[in-house]
Length: 112
Length: 112
Image 1: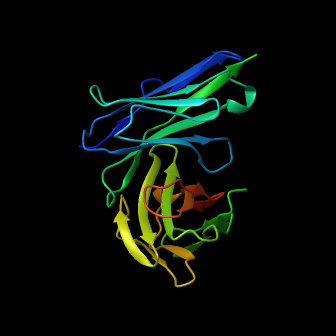
Image 2: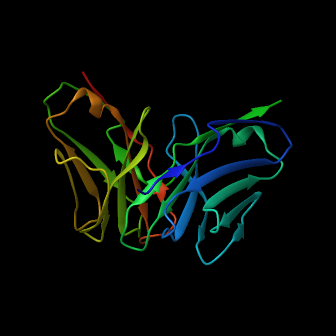
């Protein structure tokens, strides 16, 4: 069935380094993908999205890469800062009338 | 502040009871989404409304129901509550389906 998963539940990164958070999806029909950031005690916050007709999209300090061949999604955060500490979720959606499926989440821990 | 408001912030109730959670979307947003977040299940999509009509359904139990009113605010009704219903319930809104979603601060429900 449909599922969205993450390769690593916790990622520790040195402050200033780049972070890469990975996500695997199983439904080849998914056509819209989103990354969310959730800080402790807060609701998820939209970071960036990408549609299936693209393979890369850049935002401010973040880049999302989509590899449809292997059904893989990644979020790259440049020059990781202490404020980037959070749980990151990927999510997928299949066509405009379907539900949105969230992955389990990856905790990003910033080392001083 | 995302512009999405949810009330109440905390709710403690007993098993078998019924509660109503309320959400006011951002001004101008027509879509409202409800999510349940628990420690063991992660973030689960429950249901989406668009301009008063149900648009998509996720893992929503039959004991749960929702509606979106003409002024676009939404309510999530949870009945015959069980211990396992204890979770954070988030509401999110967006301009339309597959657009950036803005999450509210959540309602923490504790069933005792």
